[in-house]
Image 1 (tube, one colour):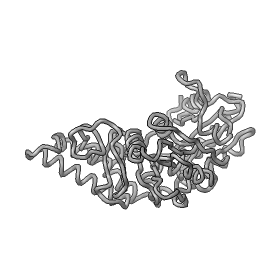
Image 2 (cartoon, helix red, strand yellow):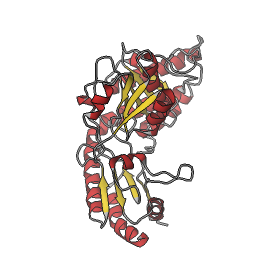
Image 3 (cartoon, one colour):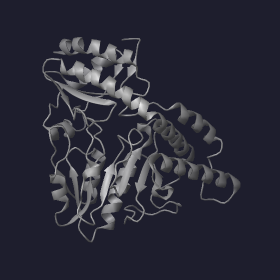
Image 4 (tube, helix red, strand yellow):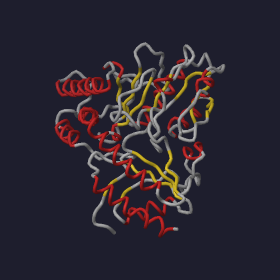
Length: 366
């Protein structure tokens, strides 16, 4: 086991940002009360929650009343997508989405309606088929992720032209904070732990004036778009992390883009290895490649022994025994897959060490 360790799985969860840690510790002293009550501790909690909402809105260039905090990114996806669909149930129940959407979107589409799945190009991007599908009879909502969580391909959300009345749901969990938000969305979801906030905080954006109805049982919270007791300290810490990430992202993105280019080059040089995803229109911190004749789980385990924490999108898990639906939809190799995603602190030395170890690890497994 290597003593030098490099965590290269920020696409699963970014380490807690120092700004979030500091804010969280301070907010725990003041944000414990129920913000809907009228006493002084509750008013303090409400003030912190409103401040968190205002900071997130400023960072994302949206209105504060368009921001809600949920229990997770998955919860935000479910509420956003299903709420749009419920508001248009008289028009139909069809949810149009590409085959590479996150499982949270795919499962919500199946649970709350009739999914209509559209194929993608080999690089993972959508084409005009999505717009044509959205024009079918009975369509309630169209879903398109801002960027793919597994291969990093950015989708042309800004260029999407949907028929009048069809709302667009955007899963931005992979990109929120790292990149400016695309335009044209009706509802959008983000996840704080993806940008260095605490886990257990999702962000749901619902555009003002958009028809949205709560798809789940109501409770007596102030914000009807969320549910349950808000985690006020965590929401404030998520806002602090987002503010810090947005302020530094130009420098971080440029550095990570160059480091990922180095890994792409090293992976492409390996025999029988495919680097998947769009080469240019991609997230700056993420790369995925697949090695023929290698088991993905074995490759992840071997790299972990050398001190590198990476993920595999092709894991045939004991529960599903199915390969990655994203890679399969792209027509890419689904075995021997590795996803490398850099943190804000990943150094050039970490990347060079990874690139030097990778060929021997792959050859050894083969």
